[in-house]
Image (cartoon, rainbow, N blue to C red; front, side):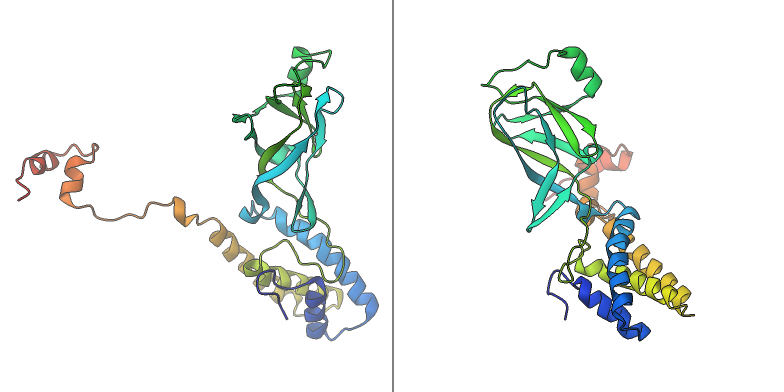
Length: 249
């Protein structure tokens, strides 16, 4: 039975596929669990999903004289640790310093401070640079301990255990589950596989459209009252000018 907000566990997805295919063999189910883990990575690459973007993630940095200015971008959300690639960072900021850190290149950082010894233990870092994978370097290398905040796009973690939930939100899981079902049907050489796969991608297409709506950022078109046209600072028709002179009483 699906969770009210998290949807279906790995085991529940496996049971769904086994029930549809009629194959309850343990080897098939083990193979399917591995496929679910890989399929989640593939699903998350299909679109720039909004559920992968997280804001205000804590990055605790230690007081350092320059020896600990490099950090991995690993964040724990609901007891699960997710990696963020350095190239997927949108903003790093310091509420304590009222400062947004500037993104720079590692080579530029090396040229400006080849000895890697700038900064003081009174002021926080002011810039950052990607290093490799999910690792970044902060500048200046000397700074006091504080908690930075990170906005960016996380990577899905590997699904460990049959009780784990996919990172994919409940409302998008139907397309994902049908995609797994198609994978299981192909394994069984079932003729229904192509039809299920096509249906899965149609559901995913609809989910992509829903994910891109951003209704709160949309100005809905409507017919304005003539008094709005008179005072909107944009309209330059003679009618708008004349309407501004009309007595409103």
